[in-house]
Image 1 (cartoon, one colour):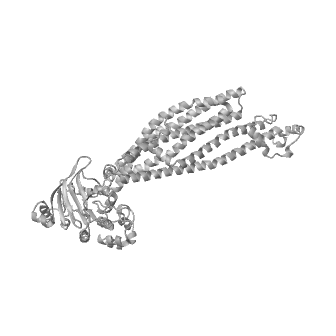
Image 2 (tube, one colour; image 1 turned 30 degrees about the horizontal axis):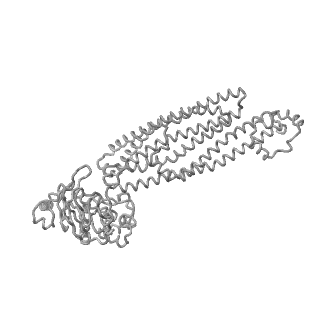
Image 3 (tube, one colour; image 1 turned 180 degrees about the vertical axis):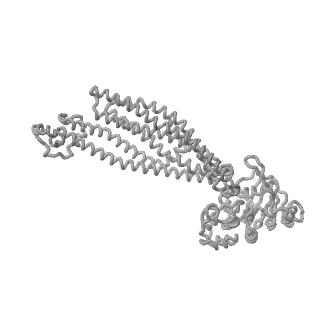
Length: 639
């Protein structure tokens, strides 16, 4: 039997955080179940009153509970209807005739009807009270479930922000999105599972107590079916957990495929690959459908079997009740009450079976969330504590080597210095290690050997958050967020003044773009900035880097997507801003690289040449050959 008190530690932790709401919800559920169980003896008394009302000569106090004897006098009687036994006897015949007046009823019958009215009123009162507790249960459980899901999403998102870049290189975006949506939605059902795990057995026990109160021998028969039910639920539950794990994995793959198809719409259309992508997606949809059907088969077998076992137990008890009634040991009213009690027991069993099903779903989701996100090692980089008061921006690579986790050597014994206020251009073929140098400077990774220094201090000794705030970054692949132009410019400069933002926009020649937009800085860019051209997006990325007024500017092919006119404007602007700060930029266009204070030629992770444009041209080495070929039109860009 799935034991929810042996839940995954992650689930327990989150449930404890919501214990107040869950406690209130379960408390309301238990009171509601208790009130429902209380209607069983009330119904039995009501049926007994109907039996007495149908029998003129029944004793007035036959099978009346002490509670009923105390409450019945509270119901006003009709004095005019009271008559002497003689007159009542004379009127008996007329009362028995069709359409006869109720005035001819005996005192026993009138008492029975008053008892029936009391029981009916009590049932109404009980269910009226139950209404408020049922409503409270729904509210508190729903709120706790929503809060649990919300807190988990926030924790997952925070965890994702702390994971290293290699995690995102290995994971598909859609798979991560699936964890934040599908898995969390399933996981949030843990609250309802706890409620069912407590309320179901409590409801069954309360009904069982009512049976014991009426006929304890029958309670023993009802208990005999519990082991059979437990065996089946446990057997089905193990298979359900495995099936649910497959469902979550298939939905993850489906979301990943959908996300890639949406992001790659332009490429798909350009290659007329709509049908191929549709076929791939259809295959994943059918696979997910198949796994859901397998899980549905497991779940579909659970409820009918629980109901069948309940029906067998009810049939057995009804037969025994018939035998006992024939022996004068039971009457119809007691049989009706016993039937209601058995129905409550069966409802409790169904709730417990649902709990078992939810347990397996929640456990599968928790294990997947733990495996996919929460157990992933966070950023391995250790943050120092130093924050330099006034930095100049002097950058030094000292005998730096770096290999990726898979063993691929990216840099080997790299040494160079970028004096404060100067610029260094990195040139070389694709895969030479240029972007790796930028990643190491930003501490996305730490060098395997050697040191990287800022103003003479090892980057590993500096506070990581503070360090990255000293850089302005223009990535190779421009990424803009859905929001306004100003929102994107202020991404790394929330506290920047309006003048600082406008100056950055002007330096990157974004001011003309803003001027022609109907809403200026408040213009919405759309998802990933798709309303802009590639060159406009690149200029916005440059303006975003400048908006925080960084001490060190890092640009990875910052002008690669600019047209000739835009490149001219941006290059002139960069000439100005590069004199005010240390700049490291990767260039494919050698005409851009030639404007740097110093140029480093990188090939296969090694530094081949370094010097100014004039010095390297005079040396007539690798750089000079590359530049001559470039200017001669043999190639438009390096790599």
